[in-house]
Amino acid sequence: MKVICNRGALQEALNLVGTVSSGRTPKPVLQCVKLSASKDRLTLAATDLEVGIRYFDTQVQVESEGETLVMADRLRDIVRESIDDTLSLELQDDQLHIRGQDSHFKIFTQSPSEFPPVPDFEGQEDLSVQGKVLKQLINQTLFAAAREATRYAFNGVLLTVKQKKLVLVATDGRRLALARGDLIDAPNVQEGASVIIPAKTLSLVDKLISNPEEPVNLKMSENQVIFRTHEATLTSNLLEGQFPPYEDVIPKECDRKMVAGSADFLSAVRRSALLTTTESKGVRMSFSKKGLTLSSRNPEAGEATINFACRFEGPDIEIGFNPLFLTDALKVVNTDEVSFEMLAPNRPGLLKAGPNFQYVIMPVNLQ
Image (cartoon, rainbow, N blue to C red; front, side, top):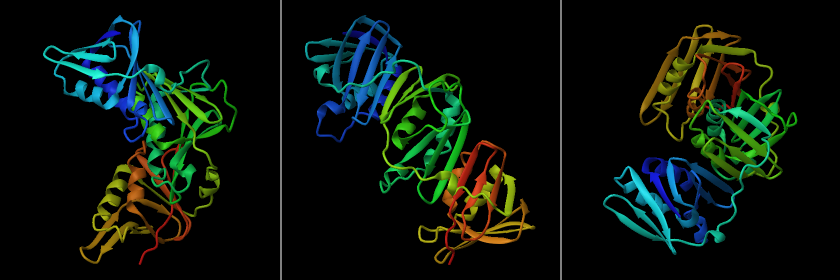
C-alpha cells in the first residue's frame, strides 16, 4: 500500500474517526484505525464495538492498493504536527512509513484481519433527509438528553417518523425538547416507526454533515442504525428501554401565554441569572399585563431585577425556572419570535418556536 495524501484532509478524517476509536480499552485493536487504499480513495475505519465509522478520504493519490491497522492516536499526532502540505503513507512489511519533506516516521502495524467488521451501507435507504435539516434537529434536541446514566433511554434521542416528518425528542426528566423537519423521502418506513439513538452517535453525525445541501440516508433495524453522508457511513447500536410517552408530557391546556422576541428574551434570562448560584438556580418570573419581571437573589452577592417588555395574555402568574434550561432552548430556536405558555406555578411551561419546535420545562421551587 502506498498513498499520497493531502495532509489537511487526512487530519480532518483522523480527528473524526478518532472520536470513535477507544483509548480506554483493554483491547489494543480498538485503539486502532484501519486504513484501506483502493482506486481513488483511502477509507479510514474505527469502532468501539458500539459505534463504527467508515470515512472516505478522496483527496489522495493511490499508487498501490492495500490495507493496514495502526494506532489511531499515534498517526493522528504525526499528521497534526507535520508541516507538509502532502504526506506519503507506505506500508512495508509490518511498518507504516509516513514521509514528509523533512521527516520520516515508522510506526508498527497490526494485522487488519484482527479488526472487528464495520458494516457498510447496503441496499436502499429507509429514509432520506437534507443535511441542514438533520443538523438543525440534532442541535435543537441533543442538549436536552440526560448526561448521567440513570435511565438508559434518557441517554439517547428518540427518532420517529410522523406525518411525513422526521421527529427528534430528547429529555432528562426535567425538560423535554421536540423538533420536526421535512423528509426528502421515506420509502421503507412505516408511520410511527421509532428508534432511540445514543447521544454520542448523533453528536458525531452532526460533525459528519459537511455539506448541508446534500442528503443524509438512514437504514434502521431492530438493534442498529446506519447513517450515510457523502463522505462517511456511521453505524451505531440502538439504546434499549422504553422512551417516555412524550406526547403526554407536552401541556395541552395553558391559559397564560407570553410572546416575545427570541434574542431579547434570551438576553433577559441571561442577565437575570448572573447572580444565581448552584444552590439557588431559580429565577423568579412574574408575568402580568405590564410585561415580565425576572428576579434572582444570592445571599452572598446581591439581587438582580430585569423588567422585560412582552405581550402577555391571561391571569397574572409568578413562577420559577432554571435559567440555564431556558437559555439552552432559546439559543437553538430559529425563529425571531417565541411564545411561552403556562398553566400554574407548579406545572411545566411550554416554549414554542414556530410549528416545529416545542420545549417543555419543569418549574423550580423558589424560597
